[in-house]
Image 1 (cartoon, rainbow, N blue to C red):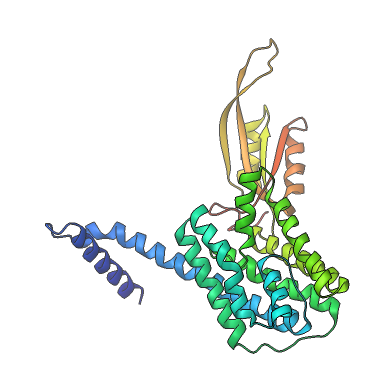
Image 2: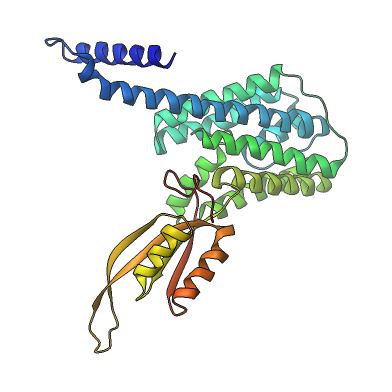
Length: 323
């Protein structure tokens, strides 16, 4: 199967190159680099839309299994759609598309048409799932509805973002306004949601609005976990005179990769700069204590700088457990 698929990709790549260079005959060997690129594109396409489909069905479960039957709302475009559904009795599947459409038009102008199209497709699939898939009503307990409705909705939003699209278009508006008004994205989202929850309190009830805030917080935290990863990574920069021993310890004892930067110390004994090597490595939050212990064994006066790393790709960190 793998051999057949590889030959098929080479054949497609060869045909594409022959079409671009109609005057020359392309051999299989010349088509291999393009075939590899096509293979990567197909692999990423499958992975992205797997994330999107999981996200769509999760968001649909949060909406129809928890929020919608109990007249709960959330923040963002989804919250606006739920609020309008309670007022107008228009089907939520249509409202999800109508409410998000202006944000996606803005996304096409601000980011790219490709991103906007992917998001439109994602929201359209979500609308179909909400309209046609019959999810059971899980509970009538308001606290459970708020927490788990937000959890499954947040899981859906986060998985869709992992797939390169959005279910909730208000983040696009927040990014655009943050550039125009020189305020943070978080502040814009907070302002938008305050307006939504205020309308919810006026139209539905203050109690529903308070539960909606809980739903929003649950969804927002879940999105953070899904997008940034449950396991936090820490980038560690180490400056020490004993950089050779520290490098050896990181590679051989902790079994982690590291990068050596050639740097200059700005404060020497005579006020002059001097050469020194700077070590950079990435570990998980759970491994940080072990790293500090091993550094102190070698050089207690080492200067250490730490910063959170949202996510990583490649390298040794996910392949080899810490010794």
